[in-house]
Image (cartoon, rainbow, N blue to C red; front, side, top):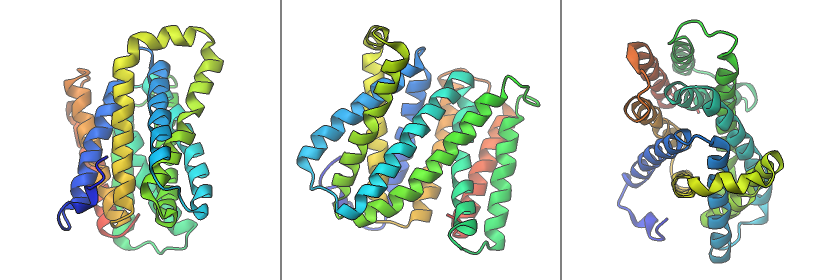
Length: 292
């Protein structure tokens, strides 16, 4: 990430950065989904995260002590997120799993804000939650009523969305008390990047190295794109309105749907297209009324 990023002009800087992050997020998810051995792919992404984090730790000022609980919590949540996303991609279509995971997140943020943080739920916010929920239901039912075999994939996608909401809330607070945005990002990348490779090694044993070799190029490219996408969002969270950032970030749903149709030749169809658009419209209503 360029050190002079904050010098981007005016109010357009934060939205431009978040939209770029949304595109990168959809692209790295598409790269990972396209790998036959998805556990190996996610392992390479985590190794890239740990490696970049180790370099940044040496260069960036350390975060303030108050940020460490947030870093630890976010790292744990992001490992859970990776495992659930991995499972969703192993079981389901990219064009269905990706928007389901991304669309679940703002609903969870809004519900947590009202039920646990004591924020009131305005009529527009309730409408946004209802619209997103209808869109998610449409995605789940786009290919008909899911059978028992499809439920684990949908459950993993929804669980991924819950983890996204959780670490978004944690990082939105943690980066603001860190005193060092790049220090916060560096230690977060390093801490969470070391865990999944250990899990993969425990599952696969010595055969893991053999599985990693042919995937190194695409896997590490996906890892670097993932790091850049999330680093851009964390930078934006330190300078912009969290609700607006969350809304713009979810435009990745549109990019993900297009990648599923164009790259993976998945049947987009009017049902999935309408459901994805409904999710995006509900997110817009939710964020414009201050729901997350």
